[in-house]
Length: 71
Image (cartoon, rainbow, N blue to C red; front, side):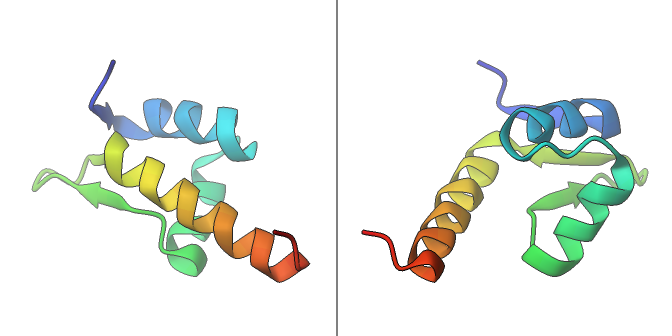
């Protein structure tokens, strides 16, 4: 299993499967508004630590469940 998604394409692919995000602008929107855990190398290239992303997905799912009043 990959531990890190390097670059825009890999990050978009990771979130396409989970949230349907299909563009870098969508990823940036989620980073700004939902605190998506995107990090940047000193060179400016973005990366995503998969374990952090999985925790984010769990927290987001829980938040959505509570919003809907579900169990």
